[in-house]
Amino acid sequence: MTGTLPVLDLARFRSADRDGFLDDLRRAAREVGFFTVVGHGIPREFTERLDAEVRRFFALPLADRLAIENTASPHFRGYSRVGTERTAGAPDRREQIDVGPERAPVDGPERYWGLVGPNQWPPAQPELREAVLAWQDEALRVSREILRALAVALGQPEGHFDRWFDEESHLHLKVVHYPGREAAADGQGVGAHKDYGFLALLHQDDVGGLQVQEPGTDDWLDAAPVPDGYVVNIGEMLEVATRGYLTATRHRVVSPGPGVDRYSVPFFLGPRLDAVVEPIDLPPELAAETGAWDPAQDPDNTLLAAYGENALIGWLRSHPAVAKRHWR
Image (tube, rainbow, N blue to C red; front, side):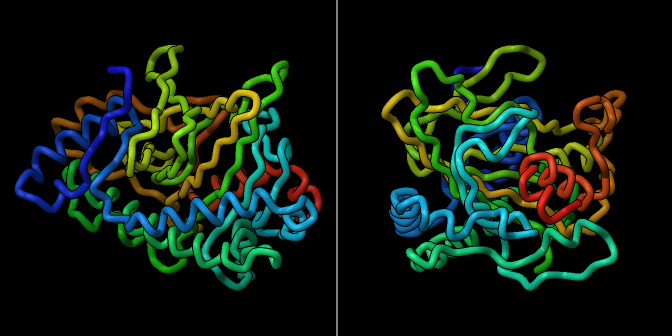
């Protein structure tokens, strides 16, 4: 693997170079599990407005940020302070807002339907809502285009995955601030983990700090920011859907140094909560590369084909204060 993530131009998917793009996409998704996408068509003004409002929010007095603290939401929406979200059992050094689609609560038969509900927005900054939701719509459009391209690259019809991504799909994003760490503090911005959805698409500033574990090694690769580029990674549900042909890759964020702030907005593409992911029939030449695959092969992170259960386990584990208050 080279010292940087593969960079793919998404515009090639709708061009005369479609086949070459699909080969590059399949190779990056299988061998690395991470790549940077450009040519996505997200207007720069959307991103510039998002960046400005994100910085405004984290500059608000703490009382204004705590007005939407996530412990008030049984749906895990809202603001959480530094150290309150945990990854791999350890606190992350970040503050953030968790945002999803604007929906009314659902009284469904399964526990995971309790994840559906409204967002919380800061009364002190009403402009944040429009900027975040506008960018969320664009991130959804790009993520679904990438997923369609992956379907074709894996020998499937372009719309193969579409049935799981209707108006009730469980997408969400995080608006994140990583404050500079103290000299003696450990470097965990976010601990090493895998994402449990289908895809994640990351908008990050130019500070850096995201690292990707090179598959099969103990080495970490810096996911350096690329101008107008978004980092994309494979989630565990695509690992299930491809019988391990695509593998979710461990990654982490290292806190910035003293006096430095990092901002990012990761978007996570998840299907309907009641989706049960069915493995696809790979073309023989691809299936021959998978070998034996066991979705329970990681004893610390057993994969479930039922997406809602994966999602609920992830939220309960990451936000123990919300779980204790609303999910006894």
